[in-house]
Length: 152
Image 1 (tube, rainbow, N blue to C red):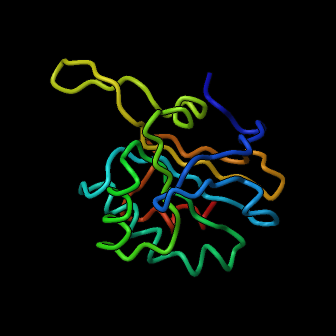
Image 2 (cartoon, rainbow, N blue to C red):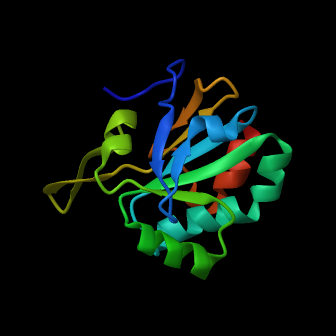
């Protein structure tokens, strides 16, 4: 069962690129953009991360912090952060626990074949830890994601 608007986000989000536990309480008093993406260093995921990087100052002015989540390893995240100069944490959800909790690990199909993968989804979480908006896979604009969030 996927988390929805009005639900409380879990307090423990996972482990970041440096092996540090990331908790929602670390962002107390701030809104959080928690975005789930399929894979480091792929075209769509890079466009999305770079949009959030380029809009990071504006997002922070509006009270948001950004956290990315994929099933890639911490070392993959470190390389992605370094290569793209990302100023925010990336959670290494290698066991898919967080993705399954949020309902972002799901079935996709390509060329008639079904397979499981991360569904690109963004959750906006308010200062109390409540989900206030979900941007679904078909709604995410990877190239303009920061501006898309700021318009909501």
